[in-house]
Image (cartoon, rainbow, N blue to C red; front, side, top):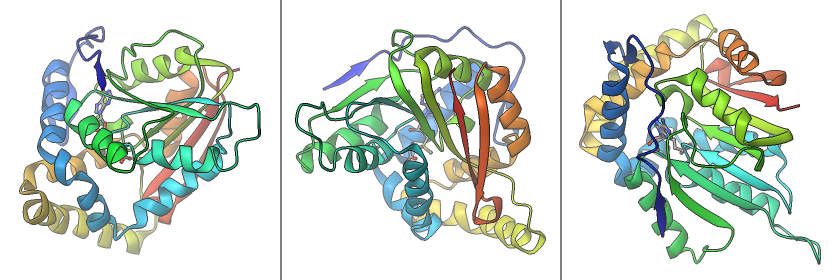
Length: 266
Ligand SMILES: C[S@@+](CC[C@H](N)C(=O)[O-])C[C@H]1O[C@@H](n2cnc3c(N)ncnc32)[C@H](O)[C@@H]1O
């Protein structure tokens, strides 16, 4: 069963927000992003493999390795979509739970019920009903009490959020003191040769693949454009500090195509 707290409106941000290369009102951005993931939900996992040549699995593994999830932990995966990160966390954390210790449990929260439904179906088909909750909710106004989680993860989600500072403040609020924040996101490519090839691939081939595989070129054009509008690694690290986190550190991977930002609520 998926619990729906999608009506939990975030305080509306002022001004405009970028939807890919377009400027729109904040409310419009949230609705447009929702439309993107409604449209791609059923083909999302297959497109991830096709677009990245499977490399998204390595990036996600690197995130889980750095997180080091363990039995007894309560984790929140925001913008968790079809549950990829949650399944990986549980696989790693609950391999050999010591007697008397509770297994790790993950709450997957996403604004889009269609993405969560695909994830929940994956879980049902794999017989993985334990230690997983599926909650519809907005990263900017999480439907959870404060100081509740040992770790907060967000993978390829934060750049889709309209009010990123609000989402970062919410991440800190729901973490226990001593809790860990870990974000995997596309980033700025800084190798000159790679940058040109990556731009050509992103703007020319990805929308075509989106049309062929998911029947939707426009949504994939948005995803590519939104990567270019996202702050660079240093600027995003500053935003995390601004939200009150400590010990912010960054690891770039694949020439800067993606980055992991880690921080702690002290
Ligand atoms: C690119 S998918 C990433 C899914 C998953 N984390 C993964 O790595 O495969 C981005 C997800 O962010 C979700 N999302 C966008 N805006 C959100 C918001 N404000 N709050 C929560 N989830 C949001 C979308 O619905 C979508 O499922």
